[in-house]
Amino acid sequence: MKKNAAGMYAFAKELFNKIKNDDVQGVSAQLTYYLILSLFPFLIFIMTLIGYAHISLEDKIQQLQPIMPAEAYSIIEEILQDVSEGRSQALLSFGMLATLWAASKGINAIIKGLNRAYDIDESRVFWKVRGIAFLATLSIGLVVLLSILLLVFGSWLKTQVFLLTDLPYGLQKLWDLLQYAVPLFVMFVVFTLLYWIAPSRRLRLKEVMPGALFSTVGWIVTSVLFSVYVNQFSDFTKTYGSLGGVMILLIWLYISSIIILAGGEINALLLNRRTVPHSRT
Image (cartoon, rainbow, N blue to C red; front, side, top):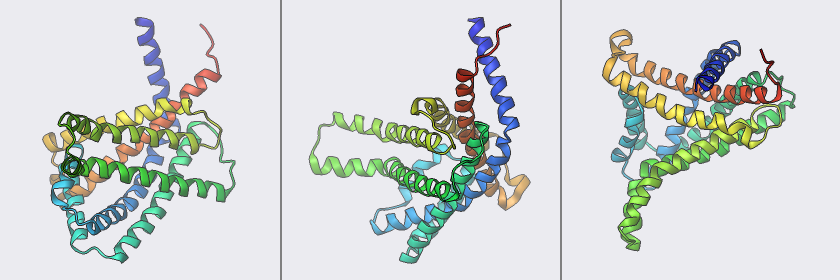
């Protein structure tokens, strides 16, 4: 028991030092910048697309509230309301193109951070790196879009399906479970693929799964805890005034960026421990 505790402490200490030496905080700030640039065009794209499906917006976006600070949620809600009232084909095109550009730059920041984690230089040619970033953006964007649709519109879809097919009531409980379990699983798959293809070295899928699991659980837990802290114990508006909501959104995305890069650091540290045996004292 004591040996396991000592081993966990040693790993945590080594991970902390590695995160500090690899400047994870600095790369996270860069990633946050591109997340901000891609977030709002992505929301514009989703809401414009949803608008053409003639689905009511107000009740659906409220399901995002439990995992977000109230001030950050209010900013996103206001933007979504504005977009839903003025959707157009131009907005749809702009949202898609702006999202692809900014998100691909964000993937580049992740590639940079993961290469640092593995202590390697980028050996791939420029067009290959850009291609990986672009394809990763498309794939992740599609998966995230499907997850959001399932999470936010799961109840609406359930009502439609059960009205049309007259399925047994017991299946509704299974649907409610899958509505939240599937997005979590999809998030795990997204992180796994990201940690697998982004670094400039060959990795096996099982070598990147620990970091993917950490990022999935860590993102959910930190988002909920940060939301509770902001909503119950902090008042950013006293410090930042009308910019309080914007600052909270930035901090939330910054924490999310650190979690993503920390997952890669965990994978790199575990791989290094397997390939470089520690000397016995």
